[in-house]
Length: 126
Image (cartoon, rainbow, N blue to C red; front, side, top):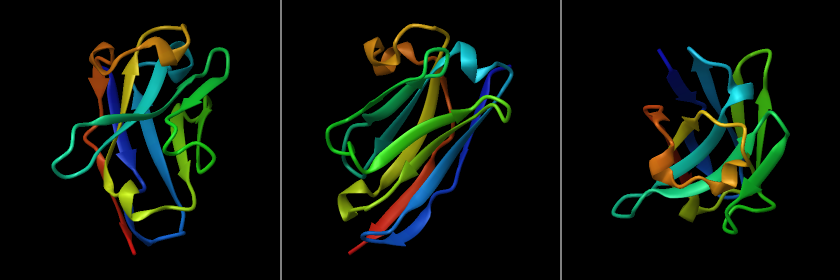
């Protein structure tokens, strides 16, 4: 059974950092495209970043480019999202999701990601 479990969320002041983890089980992240998404209160869920571990490609939304870094640890079967210079507008529930493909992850829409974690809350205070 494919499972994703996010952790690492919390409350942080603006300008601070957090590292989110997405632990995968039932599959190997190397063979999948993994995405991070977020949903703020009253807003639609939006794509944040993604990684295709098989060829190391990473992509970021313009709103987080230069501040967030996505990476994967194949030995731990875990994908990380390092978030720095956090802003109040980064406050949201963050989800990781997976789609079985070795293609460049940026080609996939949200609906293509068939497996989702339960989410982890990130709150950035001003």
